[in-house]
Image 1: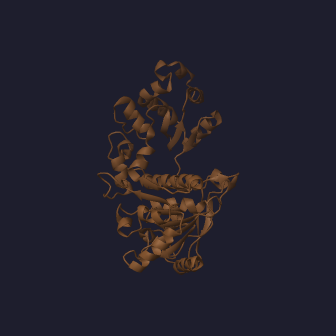
Image 2: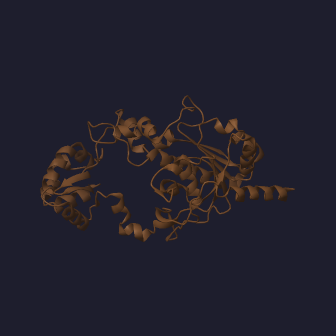
Image 3: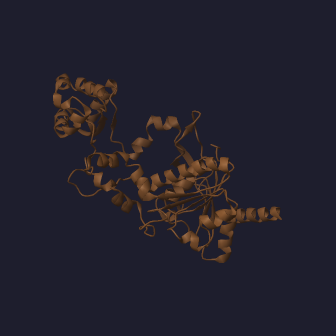
Length: 384
C-alpha cells in the first residue's frame, strides 16, 4: 500500500502501543524512523529470540528504520529536533512532560513546523489528575472495567489474553494520524492527537458502557456468554468445547431443528433473544445435555450445514492454519537482521482484492543511524 508514500514519521516509542501505531503507518507506505535509546526498545529482549533477535519485537516493528539517539545528550537532542522539523508525523509514548523537557514537544516543534501531526500515546492522556501516572496493559484492563467482565461468574479477576489496551491505543493513534493528515491536506496545519490507553479501552467497551448508562447497573462476568443473546457462547460436547452463536430468531430455529428439539421454538421463555439471554443458564444446561452425546466435530458439522455460525475453540496454531488465513495472504515470510527467516502475521487490510506485502524487514538496533543523519546533513546543505 502506498497511500502514505511521501509521509515521514518519527517514532519515539517502546514496547507495544506506539510501535504498533508506527507499524500500521509503515504498512501504508510511510517512511517510519524509529528513534531508540542506546540500549534499545525494551521489547528487543523479549523471547522468542531467533539468532538473538526478538520475534516479539519484529512483530510490531517491521517496515521501519532504526536510529539510536541519547536524549540526555544535547547533540542527539539537536538531531532529534532536526528529524522532527523535517517530518510530517511524530509518534511518542513517553509520560507527559518528557518531550517538553527536551524541547521536542508539539507546541515547540509546531511553532517551526506548523504542518506537523503529533500523536502522543500515554496511559491517561496529556492533561488531568492522572496525567503523570504510568500504566501497563494489565493495569489499564483493571482500571477500564475490562477485567470486571472477563472470566467466569464468581471467579478470580482475569485479563484478556491479548494485550487489548496496548493495541487498541495503537489503532486509535494510527486512525487519528491518518485523519489529521487528511485535514492538513486542506488546511496546511497539523494537530496534536492525545491518545490515552484508558480512553481507547473504554471507547471499544461501547456495549458495556451503554449497558450501564441504560440500566444503572454494572455489567457482570458471563464467561463466554452474551448479556443480551442466547445461545451464544462456548458449549461442552462429548470431547471438549466448541463455540456457537445463534444471534437471532431464525438462527435459533435452525438450532432447534439441528438438535431435534423443534418444540423449543414454541417455548415462551425462549421466544426472543432477550428472553433467551435471561434464561440462558437453563438453556445452556438443556443444550449441553444434548451436545455431550456427540463429539464437537459432529456438532460443528451439523451447525455448519444448518447455517449457524460455529467454531472449534482454536489454538493460535489452529487459527493460523485455517484455509481462510492462507487465502487472505495474512501469514507472510519475514527476514530478520542477519538473514534468518521466520513468519509473521502481515498487514490485515486487503485493498482492491490484494493482500498488502511487507515493505521492509524489522531493523537492527541503530542500523540506519548513519544513513538518516546523512540525510539530515544533505537536507541542511540543500537549504543553504
